[in-house]
Image 1 (spheres, rainbow, N blue to C red):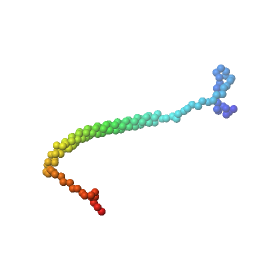
Image 2: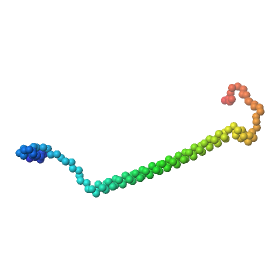
Image 3: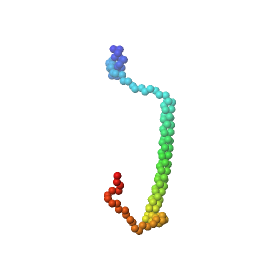
Image 4: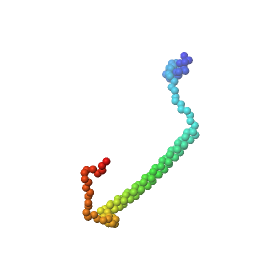
Length: 126
């Protein structure tokens, strides 16, 4: 009977004081007690670390934004330079400029062309 009393709690009924009912003990969950100062310190360091992380992330985003802006400005400058080079290429390769350059080379115009005819179908023999 002693073993039964340790597992079960004897509860007397309110209606009859002579009868007793055996019921199992209900365990209550108990959390380990934390010191309030430790809890506040952990919270403070958590908030502080999140603030530092936020500042670092925003700094990184701002730096990347400036680099994107600089790349876009370099891209527009490169596009303008490319257009100028295309125009310069077209102007230099026009028929008029080619004819002017040929005249400056002092070449002689060919009136009659003489072709050499080979006899037979071979160019070189062994």
